[in-house]
Length: 261
Ligand SMILES: C[S@@+](CC[C@H](N)C(=O)[O-])C[C@H]1O[C@@H](n2cnc3c(N)ncnc32)[C@H](O)[C@@H]1O
Image 1 (cartoon, rainbow, N blue to C red):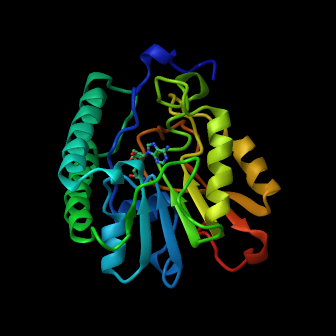
Image 2 (image 1 turned 60 degrees about the vertical axis):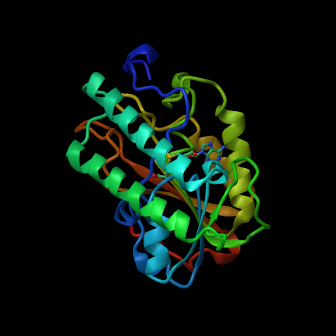
């Protein structure tokens, strides 16, 4: 990482931002087709104020979202969502060239759209156990409770600045990541996907936690691949490293589900 900007020149966040994405963004980011999710019991960990759960439920999919913020009431988490989208946008405006999106206006329009759908669905489904409060590294679910487990934009990205993440703190270091991957593996019956296996530096590099995560999952009985994603997460310049999704399949199910790549 020697040619990366020093940590003080980088995009950094003091706390985990509460903002989320749409179903279309999720499919692109995780390199998934909707058909690969039909008939499966799906968990989205660190689900945030995105509309993936709301949109997928409306299409008849069996999805549950889990996030520590779901312990709060709908009005306060919607307000937090608006504040965090605004704050991230402001950071990007003040630090040009650090996160570069092909279409920044579209990127942020999608975040507000996702938040609006999430807030309505969160209120509407308050008795249904579709939005469950919980935090890594200890999730409130049984072993192998979900066929497919997804988790985006929390692991890897909130590693400390010194390890290529954007968190200005050491809470989510390598030990936390090891325990988080063990926990995600515990609740996964078939397949686990985590995108963003690169650093949030310019240029991005393979994330230093990727190899330990792969080793952890292989040791727990998963086959692991890194598959390309064409989602624009602001890091992939012309000379950037590939945007990759970690796809881990439990060995007894290997071959039953396939990544798009
Ligand atoms: C940037 S959002 C990502 C939302 C969504 N997954 C997406 O990709 O758009 C990060 C989320 O991680 C959640 N979070 C913070 N600490 C967590 C923890 N220990 N375990 C699980 N989620 C956590 C935050 O509340 C926030 O909603």
